[in-house]
Amino acid sequence: MTTANAALIALVERLGRARVLVVGDAMLDHFVTGAVDRISPEAPIPVLRVERETELLGGACNVARNIAALGAQVRVVAVTGDDAAGRRLKDALVDGDGQVEAALVPVADRPTPIKTRYMAGGQQLLRTDRERIAPIDGAAEDRIIEAAKDGLRHAGVVILSDYGKGVLTDRVLAAVIAAANAAGRPVIVDPKGSDYGRYRGATLATPNLKELAEAAGRDTAGSDAVVAACRQVTDACGLGGILATRSAEGMSLVMAGAEPVHLPAEAREVFDVSGAGDTVVATLATGLAAGADLATAAALANVAAGIVVAKVGTAAAYADDIVTALRHRDLDDAGARLLPLHQAQDRVEQWRRRGLSVGFTNGCFDLLHPGHVHLLAQARAACDRLVVGLNSDSSVRRLKGDSRPVQSEASRAAVLASLESVDMVVIFAEDTPLETLKALRPDLLVKGADYTVDTVVGAQEVQSWGGRVLLAELADGHSTTATISRMNAKD
Image (cartoon, rainbow, N blue to C red):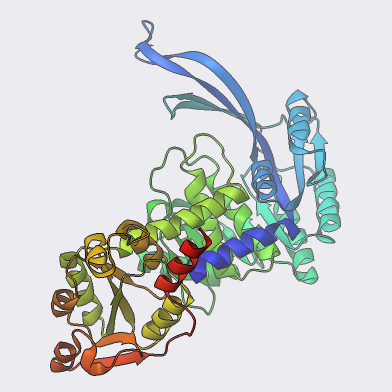
């Protein structure tokens, strides 16, 4: 497993110790799902045959749901209506084990917002909203501010989940951000509208591209334009930085005074983006509360976003989902590193154009042991990119006998390619890697110190084009043949 993925998995394992405060707009997401097999005779519209209805937490409550899915503790401060929907929301939000706490302020003249989505075949047909959009009154503001300040005593990070329904008034925003700054707590804003000056003093805002373009009043097509827009808004509005979510282009983290960090998209197939922004802000904040830096927390949020957009409905990314995705990423990376010779030549040429030195070593690597790992680490340390030539199964049988290899060439290649020290694996069917060496023309050829330069296959050729040969130090006591012998003896 790569160091980066291992570090993210270690972070996921720490998320259970995090505590997050969420302040913002609460709502319910209502899904009406069915099938469409005809057009209405009354109008040119599809007829949805309803099969089931479900109700999920939305808005700030969905952010809290995502935080809880990661194993962290969360406190939600929000407004609901004094109605049946508000009571259903509270019942769904607060769990029995105390992982989710709620400070919900009921307001009689504000119905609990409900977004109803009509779905068929995994696609939305229509959405209806039942809500009242207006600023909360002074008494409700007082209760929200008081509850937020109380929640700050235990939270490591504050999320302001702004859906523009009127809970996060200018007064509430200023009071909560000031209290968080005084307590030394980062403030992450999921923004609404074009005036980000309302969030002055916040650590980070997380707009999508459309929201960023509206806030900056400029084009956001391409990475350079995104960075310029982020810097403009950050400087003008007194923010610490912006994490711009860019759909198929991934994310860009642009902090004041720092180089931007661009994260490629993780999702392979997008089914529904409902609530993806909630997942991003929830995972980012929880990662920060668990002690990660912003770049690492953003990388974790990027993985989580790739998970939820591949699900239908307002979904959450669970801690186990993220760990599984990170492990699959390593397998995918390993597959991408196993190349046929003609593609390997192209890759090596690309590396050379970038001024990178290319090393090469080879072997059967039947049962990978510490001696192999030690040799590969030395080889990688002596060059910028390391190619491993791997004997095919037929080649191993000719060299080692019919009982070998123990593992297939596909298995051996997958294990090698998963090592951080290995940048590419090329399987060769000949008894020696000479033809592969001639095709790739590496700058460095590495073999174990049990060889001499004169006995290393390809040494003369590598030296002829200006390359060098390295005899790597061997780790004592490790041998595939000896290991197999010991296994057979036990049998």
